[in-house]
Image (cartoon, rainbow, N blue to C red):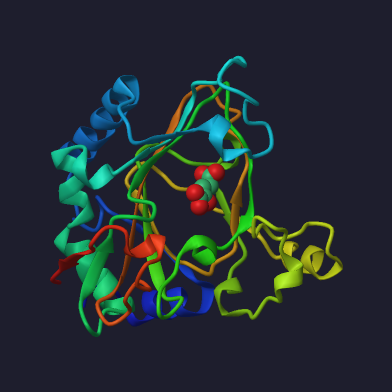
Length: 258
Ligand SMILES: O=C(O)CCC(=O)C(=O)O
């Protein structure tokens, strides 16, 4: 069994699960180091496709390309095609087996449109990400996708790690509770009660967070002295197709076997 029944139950009830990829033998220390080195090198090269902090429009992002920090990278897109070590992680057999235990009755598919990125958070110029569900801009037959977030360095509340509302993936939240960019409206009276249940996630380098696409999450800017790097891929069941013509279907998925 790739996951214990308790781990599966944790994911089902809480909407997320944290495992240590090196301790579990998914990767060894040398593989983790290659991914970390690739992250530093790829960020220094800053090749397209990428997303800048300025283009997020998030609170505390630089306002324009000309502003101080205006060229700060937030996400290096197309991670699967960028480096051999990142591709090996995206298709890691043990990770695919874990995903197969969480869904995957019809096989596990890596979606190359969504996430498929290195998330970076710069210590001087970074923004706050409001409360949202990742499914907001994705279009699939069923809202059932899982993202796999690998911490390449330590992640904690001081460098902008994720906060989540456990169990929120199971809630039916009315559209009026969200703003027009589909961030949870912090001024809505019911949202304050919900957000009081939020927890800060702490990840050590090499820990991997599996989380459901409806799990509410947010993150603060990076207030530490070092860039934060996380490698993030999104997967779905082979029986859950992206809607034809949608952005989610823009690139073919990669079918993986467990
Ligand atoms: O690292 C962050 O600020 C959050 C990123 C995130 O939640 C997202 O890109 O969906």
